[in-house]
Length: 223
Image (tube, rainbow, N blue to C red; front, side, top):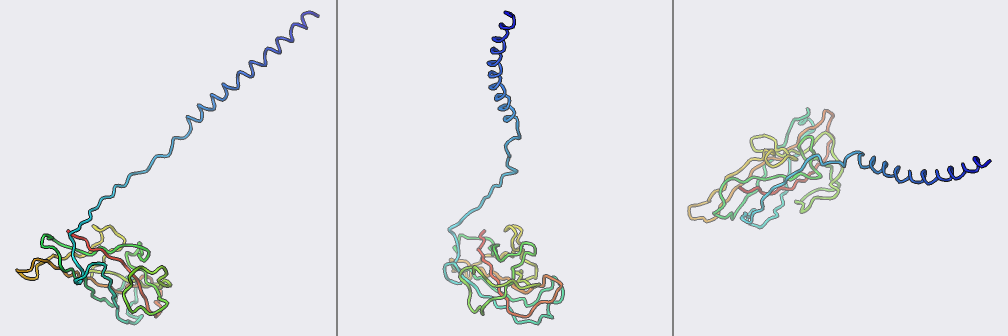
């Protein structure tokens, strides 16, 4: 009988041992959390450089912006039979004037890519306008119209090579033009940039007859 009574305190003494294990379990979980998946690392770093100059030209004798309206000829749907075929090439010019005499080298137009650019074809998306377009737009319309099917507008150099919209400047293939003095006594330089706009068929299906319109912003790239 005395021996049995002495065992109760031994059982009571075990409770603190169990309680003491709880912090140890928490410490183990904390270590496991620290050993979990590493924080996500960046896949790369993009460095962007550029240069802005205050040595610039006027366009057609005026300070930019200078907006243009290029009107393509009315052509038959049969003029564009196969994908990739172009028609209606129309010349447009951007004339730089009053360029400083200190500015030398070649200039070109950089055609900015935006919501009207098709990055798969490097062309301008053609839209069916809700109303006739009779003047150059000052800003890109928020809703230019419904997308025309199987036809787009392409910008090209005068030798017929495509200007690849949506590409970086060095890859756009935009022709360059030399700045020149109009006379020996002229202290300013000029340059006339010449490009083409034309229709291009982009699909095998027939093109629906109707008016089309598109828009592209441009910037002058200086030497």
